Image (cartoon, rainbow, N blue to C red):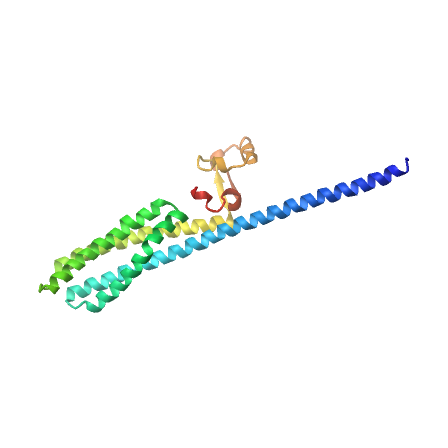
Length: 231
């Protein structure tokens, strides 16, 4: 009987090693698959946000340029070609504006959609109203009006400033998203980050003399799930 003990121990050890090894392999495979899926989701979010930012800023530039052309043409009293081009641009703008509001809210926050609507879109509408009023007056027999041109031009300059401010904010948020996705999220000892720190990080803080300058970098997939930053 004593001779069988080493054999039994060897067999049981091999079986135990095989079972545990298989479990560990499955665990690591599932973890790697989950991390890959999370990173893929975050990367797709960034690509979608970059595409949305480029599209919105391109549309803003196209509408602003067409309105400036039309305003100058109205001052000259010959505006039919510019009016046709402007209507094509505004038709494209109107088809995408509500989808842009929704995507900004979905990808970032509602405040970005509000800024686009209240500071950019409303300015376009007001400037367009001024030009339409002048066009109707000219079609009724009035002469080009320098005062009307100046009012519309002033409003377009204000819109240009709003576009520049909105564009900087949008580009900054897009770049921040890129850095988070590809380089990780830096967590500090602040109220906004405290719940994202792991228990191990909080324990390390007990031995850190300067907690205000404490920070750790974590893969974004470990901090945020896709869409999680907005939920």
